[in-house]
Length: 67
Image (cartoon, rainbow, N blue to C red):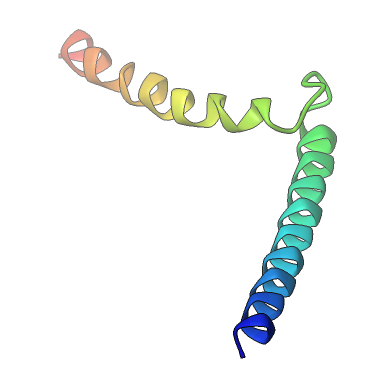
């Protein structure tokens, strides 16, 4: 029973790992198509968190300037 459980768990891990690799490859292809300047698909994920803070900061000073 233990060997069957270990084999099944190893198979599940392999299946999940292959799925994750394929998903990441598809993400890289889509990111390359959207952002041709970035050579790797991993880089576009880092600017995403940086863009919202920069987008949030300008409106705050812009409101007092408009007043």
